[in-house]
Length: 165
Image (cartoon, rainbow, N blue to C red):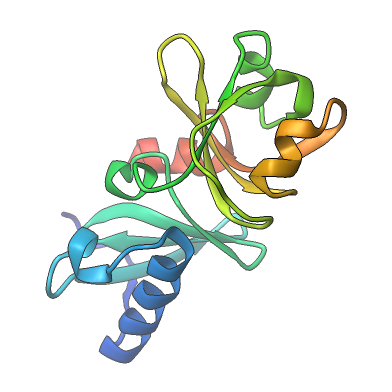
């Protein structure tokens, strides 16, 4: 890994706090997905904080919201999924929030403000990470309007920065 002057290693206490906060959001034990002593660097670019865990940009914070990037498959696999129909895919990939009519399936129960993984119905491909605007029971009943806020998708600025790494 090349030295990046914008990156700074987090102190042990800062790193522990970050991993604990993140692990609570996705419901796991930090050591299970990060290992016993992960090295964490932070860099801020275009208003987003990126946290590089052992050299990979696995976590981001945007507008105070901490979430896994779309390359962090271990964390993404722990999130409840919203499956969207193929008509919704281009919109979700362009950063649109998830609308009730586009939801074809919900994989697990979740609460309002929980992180969710948005996937397409044909291939199960990860399209976005979002935040639930309602709990899973409510979303199943809602017929119109936004149900998930899209915070990171495969064509956004976060994705383009990650792909350059």
